[in-house]
Image 1: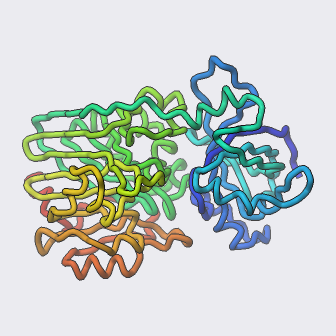
Image 2: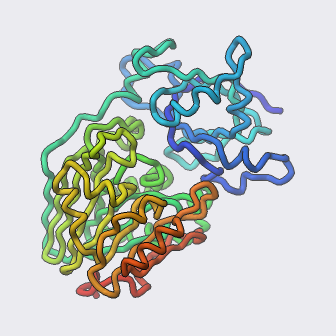
Image 3: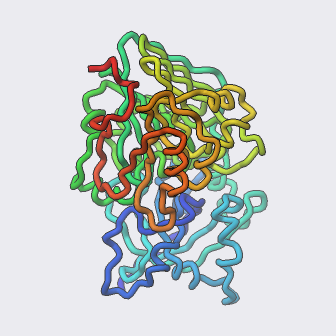
Length: 423
């Protein structure tokens, strides 16, 4: 067993359930890891805080994939197990954690820099202290806690961009994530930049997969990124790929939220929390709206930027993880009106989960398509069969690539008429 120094980090949840998303090949058969242990852990994101001082404006973010056995073995100083009692509040974003860990090459849990290409290092968690945002009990709380609690300054003004050249849209297969590119040959707009199983971090960083997205982006002068909401499967590629991040001029997120990734130096100056974005050209009008959930939900999936595009006279909908039933009841009239449109192309909400089978909008033609941007994540098992069936019953053609380990364009398929004027 290899031991190194013990280090402490302040963490929030990144994803509540994981199955070694980033390094599936780290599931060695000879280590006797329990399968349920591996596929039901928790993903944290955080930073070391012991050396922070009041002049620090940025941090180096770390990603942690913590297996169930690691969580279950952690105990209070009085040796009573506690993790199971408090982990759900942490997963729901109602608390944060102070994690103490050391390196151990025999552990099923690991850590790596969130923004970078370094290999993961296996760790053992010595202790976890779940703490209240209101009454934290740890040293440096006044310095470290604002990094994960402060909302980014909001920009509630409407942002408008105008262009002369025609645009086209390209959806991509990215596994359990979402990503599409709208571009005019010079300027591009990424509608999310996520990826997930079976598209893996290690394969991506080592360039052993086909990557149509990076080939298409390399031809553009600059791009803008619209992140529908702040779950990492909708922006993970900017963590993995400095080339994509370097091309991005601005990153649009829903206003009124705190986003720990914005504390990374490479991210901070690009982030623009918005209420509304309008992009226009001769053949295209994009409208992006901040949702106002009817029940004032604080869940990430309910605090979104939802995007509607009229391209060559056809409507396209990108709702992120915001389900149709919420769209129709949203308190933002611009959002609720979207439920009344017909669509030639829809990227199915929440990867085609069970809830996405209800109140499906109408197709605009016999060639209308719904794309389920889903992967082969064992726990989520998207898309839901009922959702696929109901979209078909509504009149949509359906496309999904659950098991593709490459990032591929789907424009080679006879999917929709929206790009008809683009040769």
